[in-house]
Each structure stands twice: as structure tokens, then as C-alpha cells.
Length: 176
Image 1 (cartoon, one colour):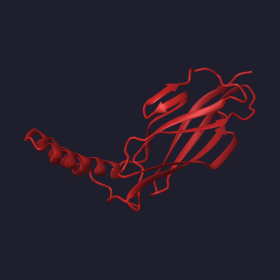
Image 2 (tube, rainbow, N blue to C red):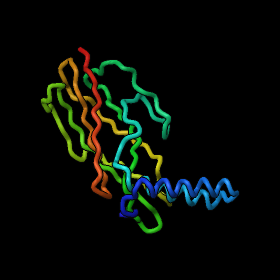
Image 3 (cartoon, one colour):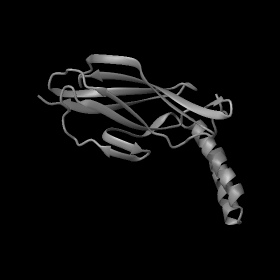
């Protein structure tokens, strides 16, 4: 796994302040380098979290998606989830860098009864020449047959390059 030990908040702020000083003094390249170091310190200290997690109708790219209307699903509909994860780890792969997150899903009733679950339901993977901090993923599946009513979709993301995990619960309903 690439990266440094978790940074202290002071370390993040110190590196950001240096970037601000350098850009103010007319050293934009050095300021960008200092800012990148601040971002890396933040990334290492941050838990795995989601900037966005939502049911969507379509996705054209990072931040370019159409949220699904707040309407019930019907049996057989496609559940399409859009994610923007933050704080995941990186691994070196030759001259490239990769990030990978495992996705577990669970459908349950509001009362807690688990109706179905799948570990490693999906793997989200990104590879590039440098660390990517703005990525998105879409996971989709057909809705299994469920009686009309309210349900919760619990999604657990597990960083393949470190111990970080996060959960998000998305409520949904099924129409008759």
C-alpha cells in the first residue's frame, strides 16, 4: 500500500498554509506541490467516506448523474447506485497506481430482518499514472422480487488497500 502514516490535522493545515504562501509569493508550481502534499496528508488521515451515494437513472461521468426520482421501484427494475468515495488507499502497479474497493450489499426491512445479502457483490477499481482523488462508480442489479413496502439497502465499502470501511443505508420502497 502506498501512502504515509495518518497525518495530524496540524500537518494538513501546515502544508496547505505553505501552498497559500507560495502562491501568494508568485511560485505557482511550488504551491501546487505543497497543496498536493496537503491533500495526501488529508487523504491518509481521512476515514473511507462517501461524498455522494444515491440511486440514479443515468451516469455520464464524475459528478454528472441524474438522480432517480423519489418513487417506488417495481419488481424487476434496475437498482443503479452512484458513489463518489473519498479516503481510500492506493497500491503501486509498476509505473501505475491503483485503488480498489469491495462492495457488500444487504437488503433488509426497517425492522432489521435481513432478506438477502452478498459479500463482494462488486469490485470498484481505478488505475492511472498518479493517485486519483475524484473517482466515481456505478453498481447496478435487478431488484429481486419483494413484497410491496419499505426496505433498506445497506451498502458496505471495504478498501482493498487498507483497513478502512464505510457503510451507507439507502431507503427505498417497492410498489404493487
